Structures are given as structure tokens and as C-alpha cells.
Length: 403
Image 1 (cartoon, rainbow, N blue to C red):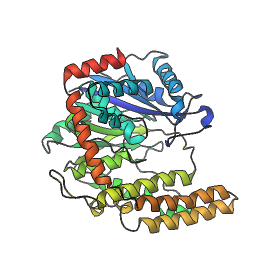
Image 2 (tube, helix red, strand yellow):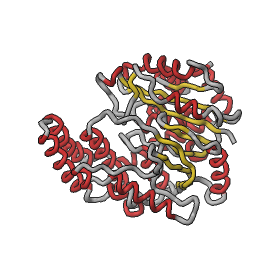
Image 3 (cartoon, rainbow, N blue to C red):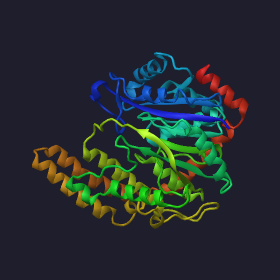
Image 4 (cartoon, rainbow, N blue to C red):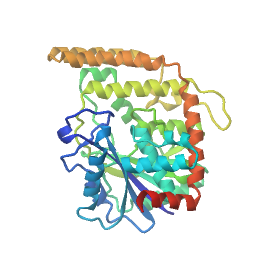
């Protein structure tokens, strides 16, 4: 069994000051050391000959790509790690796009992008296919792997789950700095009307209480995610989701009749830096995300090989945000948050907060069929991976990318 361990990493301007084309939760400023090297060093005692480690480097400002690529290469190589790391960034993306154009498939270029979380995760899947990996293990650059049996546990889980289902995904848990796997609930008044962390914690609590050591889950974390080749070659991340691409992937898999399971003991230490963005901006991403995901569920139509997914079967999380009362929760929470901003003299932040409600309405009323668009994207994805499944073609593209 061969593994591709994929680590996306996100970067922004020095000191975090500058225009950002893309939203990332906590991108690393270019003038800091960040957390990526710590993650890579935690893998030193775990990497084996049957593993390839890959890093996908993304920039919040598209003009930063040359600097980001140079900075990440420096971090990977100085000092050298005792195992090789393959880097994929802006310059490699252009090579990939040229390859698919040369094959006469310009439509595949839409599958290859660094514009957002879903698109970046898809490039990790492409990297796994290029190396012919049996399994993609997705980590994040703000984590450390402390369990010396981490990959052995994954291999054992895959053997067990392979007897349950021919096609499946596997998720693990984060251990936070306080040693818990549940997150602290915000104490802000607005969060009472937007209980995202509480509903996530309820979902985790139910999973942890399950008798089955590998219960089926509606919730997965992108920094501890295991995708066998049969899954990642068939199903992409939805690049239109602005945030929460991991949970969205589980829901999409469910549409295809593909279950996800949680190993309650497959744990990774999560050490995230502080989030630099204001609450109104993080909420904006969530509003658009949930409205888009709800629209995709509402627009489901009968299709061969697909099953209809209801928000009710995804409760508490993410299902509670995919129902008809999303607007009511949004209006209550945002009104309170806007008043909080006004109380401390932050009128601009209050205006941006209320602007979120307009964006929610715009997304909710979007006439485009999100469900049909994702099926079309998936069909293109499967064509790309049918090409990459040819070992000679994959080897040739690897040479073009990395020599």
C-alpha cells in the first residue's frame, strides 16, 4: 500500500498587510517562519519508502506566487529533511494546464486551480494520482503527527472498512492545544444565534459515544482525512465552496452512495495560529458556504448511481445550517454582531456585517443549478483521472513537473 501525504499551505503578504484575492483562515505572512516546517519535522520518524510527501503552496494574493514558491522551497530544504518533499505551486500549475491543453482537453483546465480551499484540495488529489498512490492522507500545515502508529492505524482501518464497502472515506480527529477533541464555544452574544461550534461538538460527542469503533460520520476534518484511490479518482472537492470543503466532500460522497467513517483514535495534534480576520468576514464565508450547500441539496434530481440526501440526515452538523431557518439564524446573529461593533465605534465593521445578509440573499436566490454544475465537474474529473491512471502518462507528467 502506497501513500501520498499531502499538506496544503497558505501564505500572504509580510505582516499580513496587503490586498488578498482569496480568503484563508490564517495564511502565513511571508516574513515569518510559520508552521509548515514543524509539520514536516513531525513526519520524520514516520515516513517510509512507500510514502511520498507533497506540499501544495497557495497565495492569498495571486501576485505573490513567485515569492511564496521560493519561501516554501527554502523552508522545505533548509536544513534538508531526511526524506524528499515534492512542491506544487503556481509555476507547476501552469505546466499542468499546458499538459491538458496539449492533450486536446482544454476543458480539464477548470479542474486545475489554486483559487480556494476546494480547488487546492483537488490539486492534492491530482498529485496523489500522478504518483499512483493507493491512498491519499490529507494533513494541514498547522498540525503535528504525534502518534507513531498513525499510518499503521490507517492501513488497519482500510483493511477493515474494505470488507464493509467497496468505496468509502475515512476521517480522524483533531486534538486541540487543551487536549480536547471538541472546540471551545464562543461566548459572544451573536454566537448564541449561530451555534456552529456547539453543533459540531454535539456531532463529535455522538460519534465518540458510538459502540462501533468506526462509526459512519457526516463530519470530517480536512487536516486528518484519508481517501483511497478509488474514491479520490472518482470524486473531487467542489471548488465553488468557499470554506468547509471537507464537510462538503462528505455530503457529496453521500450523494454518490459513498459512506465516510470516523476512527475515534486516529488523532492528530492541531496547533493553529490566531485567525487574523474579523468575525464578520469569517461569518461571510460561512453564510455563502451554507447557502450554496443548501442550494445544491435542494436542486438534487434523480440520477443513475446517486441517492437523495436530506439535511435531516446530516443533523446536527452540518444539517442544522442547511434548513429553511438559515436566514432567520443569520439575521439574528448578524443584527447582534452589528450592534456590538457599533457599541465600540466600529461603524465600518457593522456595515460589513449587515452586507453579509445581502450576500446571503444573493446566493440563496442564485438561479444557477449548483447540483448539475457539480455533476458536470465530476464527469470532467473522472476523465482527467482516467488519463492519469495510465502509468506512462503519469510518469511523463511527473517529469515535466519535477524533472
